[in-house]
Length: 215
Image (cartoon, helix red, strand yellow):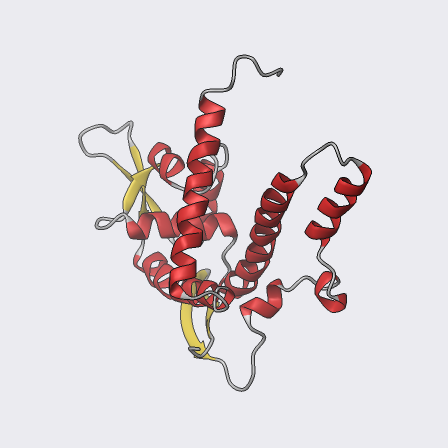
């Protein structure tokens, strides 16, 4: 496993400077950060417990979908905790990281409109402008007007923003690899395939609800 790395954000004259430091000695792993404190301590599995209880109380029902969606919800919650532990020392929120990553992966000149950011990111449209304000105040993005249409405003990565997200994505991917180390590469690919299949089914269900189903 690669050594854990941390990006430290320091503020100089109201702006941030980056310092990449290597952890010395044993550090708490991302998997340990995400570990449920109570369920893991006594070996209990709350998802299995819930489905078994429903089978006992309502044998006429099939609670097996709970085993899937409950597990997805718990995995997401633990991943967010692990992500926060990695990004908070960098001064980044989940939304801030998503926005900077969106701009960085889009390629040069690393700029997008608020609408484009909302359509291609993991954050909702409602808070895009608010988040842009915060990132701009931190010197991580700048607002740039389209020279051909002054009504169009882009969010563009600054050099400092690019440096921060380049270091943050390294730590982020290292954390996620750490969380998935119990799965082989083939298992990870199969899991990703199955989750994509579930996602497509959910989108299809929401976009084309069964007209005969009660709402």
